[in-house]
Length: 368
Image 1 (cartoon, rainbow, N blue to C red):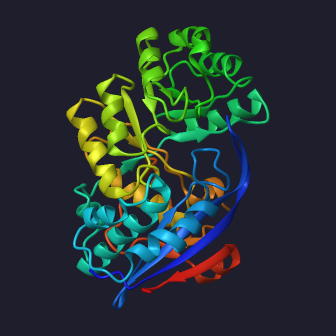
Image 2 (image 1 turned 30 degrees about the vertical axis):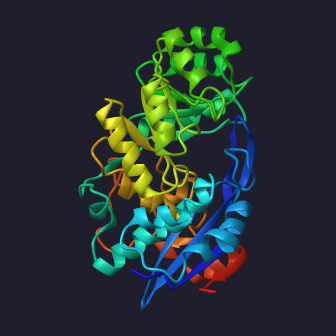
């Protein structure tokens, strides 16, 4: 396959309600959409690192810049038979997994279209429904959170993820676990704590949480390994896992018992598969994460989550959870059993009207 052109869009998608985490608030989700063109075929990918480098070191602006100024010009006009060849071409550039993923995922989407093969099948997955969990950011009050959790429990979600941060942790967890003692919960700390907070982690050890997601520094594995020795609650890594190499080192030192895989965070789908297989061989379950993308990005997460070691319910959301209207069609819709079905035909693509409305910046990359 020859990549003839990349059309790159920096978009801003307003949220229905602010998304609050340990690193701040997001009132909109800023993503980079890439349309890859090969002959008469075109396909879309999305990478959503958020507006500012608060989740990790990249931002939507940096991804747009690197894809349009460096990565894209280095890739277009060449033939790529495999995603590994795309990654090898991009290996010259250090880090920037979100930027590289925007191009690598577009290659997979093109391959799916050209071969008329569902993406999940190309990835080695099965045509099976993918279980979704419920997630809640930091709320205006504990009463508000409890009301939202009650709605998720009534809807039959199998687990609930809670954002935690200093000042929104111990009292919040006491209220939640005492009110819903039979529900499966885990907390996402978004790198907000250190080993000095060991008394807090020991204080919640008896609460029966499924795991603690990324409690410590975003680039750390050694402190996480130490924490894992000190507490009974399992540790899950998210931000620390930006590549297969990072995953291998985390597994080697015993830093985690779960791994969250976000395709954009780890540099694309080939890297996601490698981490999935590595974790499977080590007896570590994985689960799919999301960055509140449009249906372009979240549909790819559903496709990936059909691989067999994705056993914990994922961070997958219907469009109506965060957006008045999705940028892409078709919308993401839950089944009555709180699952998503993989796509057997074309993946969602941007609605031209919504794309124009929400585009901040655009650039087309063609061979020099």
